[in-house]
Amino acid sequence: MSPALQILYGLSVLLGYYAVFRMSLSNLHMFQLNGYRADTQFGWIKKNFSKYIVNVLLIPVAILFAFVEGEVFPVLAATVVNVLYCAVLPSNRKTQAKKPLVWTPRVKRMTATALLEYAIFMGVSFYTLSTEKYLLAFGIVALNVALCPVLIVLANGFNQPMEKGINARYTREAKKMLSRCPDLDIIGITGSYGKTSVKFYLYTILRAWKDTLVTPESFNTPMGIVKTVRGDLNAMHRIFLCEMGAKWVGDIKELCDIVHPAHGIITALGEQHLESFKSVENIRKTKYELADALPENGRLYVNFDNEAIRKNPPKHKYITYGTTSDCDWYASDIVSTADGTQFTVHGPDGKQCRFATKMLGIHNVLNITAAIAAADGFGMPLEEMKMPVRRIEPVKHRMQIVEKNGVTIIDDAFNSNPAGCKAALETLGGMDGMKVLVTPGMVELGAKEEECNRTFGQQAAAVCDMVVLVGEKQTRPILQGLKDKNFPDEKIYITDEFLDGMQKVYSVSSEKKKIVLLENDLPDNY
Image 1 (tube, helix red, strand yellow):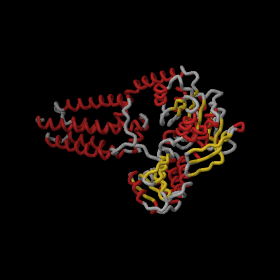
Image 2 (tube, one colour):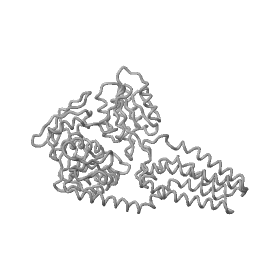
Image 3 (cartoon, helix red, strand yellow):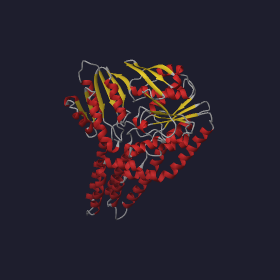
Image 4 (tube, helix red, strand yellow):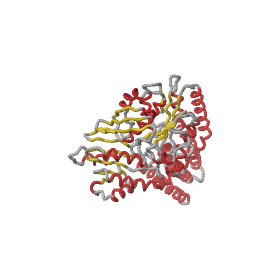
């Protein structure tokens, strides 16, 4: 091969590796969102196979080049293919991620291992340029591009022994720190939904009473909890509110083995994460791992408004809360206004107190009741809870009320479960104005996803004056549910972009004030 063609071919190979680099970042981002689980990542690739068609097609194209005579055509063809491939990369990437790739130490280590894999491919491909098999260089680049998603998972596999060692060391340190705090009361909080709200409501109440540590945001994984303990726990803390999340059987037990909670709250059992849990029974089993981990004298609070818990309560002795008088703790005389909600909480032994909150919706009253019951268990008098309850703020993206451009927005974007959607619609239905739902639907519900979304559409039809569906394919079951209830076609707007949907809402004229419910917000891997 002439020096000029060799240089051009070398530049073509570099261009191919640029494409590999760009695609690697995208795959790394998805792998992080998929919890660094190979099975989940491969399932995502299968669902989004259309993004990888070009990768696969590069293999037979590269093989064809190996049988073409001459030098000029293969070099030019390889260059053109790489240029075109780089050109289509932007179409497979979102302009702005809702949750960008976080460059954690684990991601940096994984990236270093992946770069080593790519360096091996690159070294072999450049070596072939100086041999009689120089056309194989492009074939090696094409193979690298095609295997790019697999190589990220493979890099994680290579790093597993090291990652396990690092995590084990951090976990031992966290356990040691907890053991040095014998007076620390630890309460685990889990549930299919509502756990983050209950956690922060309880924190708002208790921090006025005792020094309280809480896992921030939605830190509810082993390393999230370990990071909280190692970074924030000190000798002054008397209570630790530990949120516990799960997607697979055994996840809650793993968290309990780290923090050893003395008490627990189970907020609900529902059809969330059915895609990974596979069955409602597995969800129940996993959430009740918290109850199984508690000592015999540990207090366990369970939501008896949740039918799944009421019908199949845990074996550990429990304290019930809800909105019916047969519960140990219950809310009654609930009065909602534009300024918030007032309600009376009743407890054992005739305990009773009237509370006021700026929060809306019966489900928020229920969550606050759980927090009040747990705070009472820690010795805080009901009367001293009145002011903290009044100060409770909405958790971000969980029925958060926002006023924008003269429109009242109920931001419930974090929610993605049938019970939560129904409760949000009930709250919307109780407000005066033009009621608008903006939603992409629910995900991670496995085989029940279509049925649940169709039911969601039927429920929305009974409440809403207008519905904006974000994502034509994903929202088809919701659309069918709306049609089941003869919801007017002219009141339905379907778009692929959330911002376009909101612009449509703002543009619609109405004599009534618009109240917009943002229900669910699909993550970047959907």
